[in-house]
Length: 99
Image 1 (cartoon, rainbow, N blue to C red):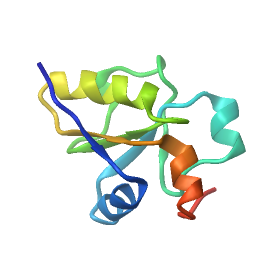
Image 2: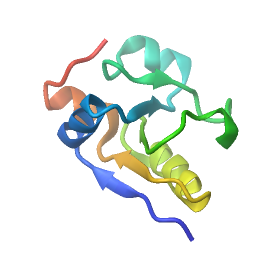
Image 3: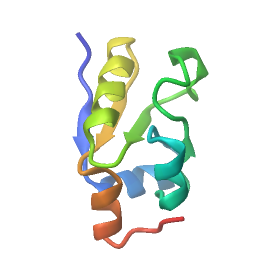
Image 4: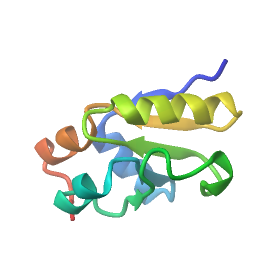
């Protein structure tokens, strides 16, 4: 069984600066409204594990539930995965860069 790690938005921003990809799994309308700067948009259900970038990955959604499901699946495949706890809501509340 895989095991992903929950991280704060600030930790995710730091990992982004280290080159770890942040994948936003929200739907198109959610992404268009606001998203974490530098995130890649891959809506849930539109990609497979083989479509993901190499290396460790971070996942974000609106509040952290959908992204936790993806992080769990990715970690079960043997990859290092992180879930941004609190999702985009927490990212925005923390005052982090958004698009």
